[in-house]
Image (tube, rainbow, N blue to C red):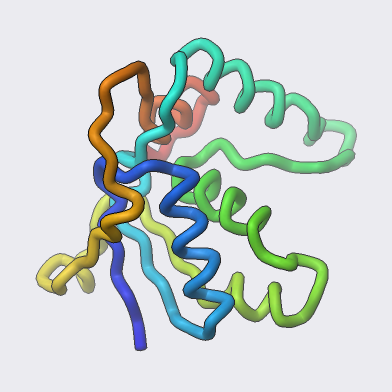
Length: 141
């Protein structure tokens, strides 16, 4: 069974936790609109944290860890940190996750789910994964 989740306006960490649990249970999960996923906190602090992660892995010297700049890959990396990545069950679960920027044509007319746990009224400061990707220099928005 494939579950399609619309990430627009959902909280980053909460959604990643839900997705990690579902893929570990054997479910195929597709997340669309990953550029609209919300990260709560002060904008400059969030940008600084992501910039530090990207700078930590120097791609010119082929030293890791390599951290993505695109919104869809940043979300996948967050989910990867919540599963047992070094075991075969974790790697197989990770293959069941598909994340897209925007909505692809094959999912345009499909009923999408919005997990209630990941929905929260935002009263403070926040930014989106798309804004972070743009700050880091991603061309995919």
